[in-house]
Image 1 (cartoon, rainbow, N blue to C red):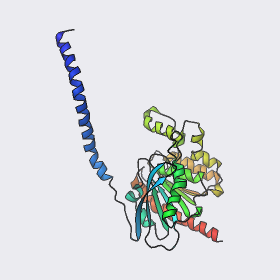
Image 2 (spheres, rainbow, N blue to C red; image 1 turned 60 degrees about the vertical axis):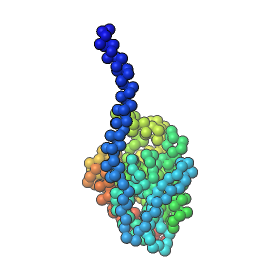
Image 3 (cartoon, rainbow, N blue to C red; image 1 turned 180 degrees about the vertical axis):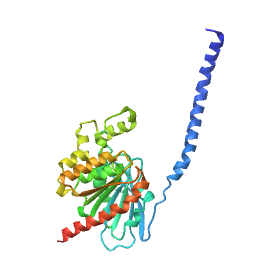
Image 4 (cartoon, rainbow, N blue to C red; image 1 turned 45 degrees about the horizontal axis):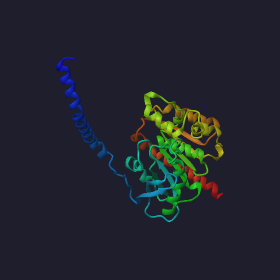
Amino acid sequence: MPTIFRRQRSFLFFFLPVVLPVVAILIAFLTLTHRKPAEAAMADRPRLAPGIVTRDVTFYSQALRRNMQYRVFLPEKRDQQLTVVYLLHGGGGTFRDWSNYSDVAQLAGSDLLLVMPQGDYSYYINAAARPVDRYEDYIVNDLPADVESRFPARHDGGGHAIIGVSMGGFGAVNLALRHPDRYAFAAAMSPAIDVPRRRFTWKRFNQSSSFLEIFGPQGSDSRRTNDPFVLAHAADPKSTPYLYLTCGRLEGLLAPNQEFAALLERRGFAHEFHPVPGGHEWSQWATQVPGVFASLRQHLNNDAAVVER
């Protein structure tokens, strides 16, 4: 080997161990600097309403074996137990999303307690391969128990509703079908309704790996028992909460949501489905929130009337 090449190789062996850590530190610095505007954009700025108060709560979840947070909106003046509405965020979101990106506080009125829990990236189920991620038990058992211990919440199933967007929309439908006695109304905006049916793909390796950990392998019991299509085939339409669904016409989720709505129609579920303008984003969902709550109040009132008769 020529002397010049031996010198270059010796130089590289000496130089690289010194330079690479410096380059790594520089990249990390630039990454953090670049993320500052995004972090500032995600600042917590809840949209409040006159006569409505907000509270942030941290409590210990037995199901998850760790502290979890949720936010509530409730009327400042109240003389009755409040109907509880659980609002589930989407994938990558937090318990602050509903209050920051929609005017849902204005819809609480004098009789609703809005509860916005942290759901992480869980699809609100008990994960197949993560023993400590029992998010279904957390939402169905731990969260209501804590809410009812702190706030004037109704305890009966007719006094509870569940609403979600995207991943949270999946959670709302799935939990309503799995626990029909817990809710009188369930709504989903752009629900990722077909996630348990999606096959592993290398093109979306990270997402597919997460789905495998959450839902289990294709064909497994954990997939089937958390598949809204399978559940809707088996559920009793007469005992299922009223289902309200929307999806943007520009979304890739439109086709599976149309398929799910057609299944609900064939089986005679009380429901409505609205294809709406827009894509998979909060600017679209925020415009649908008033319609969701109008239907919520209509069907909760109908349930109350049935009970009184």
